[in-house]
Amino acid sequence: MVANIQLTEEKFQELEAFINSLPTTKGELIRVLHKAQNIFGYLPAEVQKFVAKKLDVPTAKVFGVVTFYSYFTMVPKGENDIAICLGTACYVRGAEKILDAIKKEINIGVGETTPDGKFSITSLRCVGACGLAPVILVGEKVYGRITPDMVKGIIDNYR
Image (cartoon, rainbow, N blue to C red):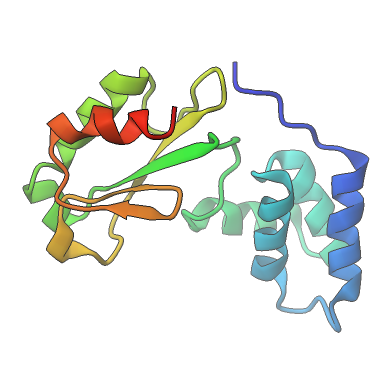
């Protein structure tokens, strides 16, 4: 069970105020979804339906954008999202072993969040830091040239 993230009326009001502040809503779906994810932490079906209604676009279009872009998530991420690059450079330099060490250390898989809501694991295709491969990000902090032995120490910094 993931930490309970509330979809409060205040959060919906904040999102509605943002939408209402836009000069036009035409072509603003991605911008609104970014704001919504910033407010709620993720984009569950209720939020997607709300955005669709307010922007007068089909819910299927909103869902399509949310599922296409890896930035958006429909499940709550942990307080510390650990993103591992599985792009070619990182992969050939051992990213899979790094991922296995992360999964073992916090006892969850990719796309999951720890029961206490502290950590989640995300995989990425490339972070543009190939010279530092293999690379992980914890939040926005980049860790390069990672070895499996370094994983516990990195994670311990966030416990």
